[in-house]
Length: 64
Image (tube, rainbow, N blue to C red; front, side, top):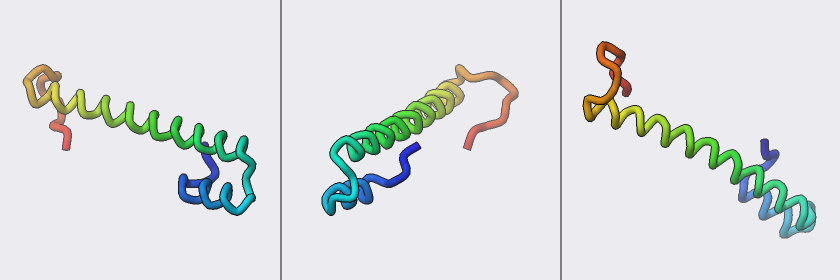
């Protein structure tokens, strides 16, 4: 997990508190976190679409 948000990484790099290598590492961690969140959201969207299209499991709880 990244220790800093993107704005903080950029600021710390600009003022010399992070090396280029550290900044790249932090940015890669941020990208990884965003990718995981995106995949989770895409999975939820797919499930909601299946229910909306009538392809979901019958008798289940309606997603919000």
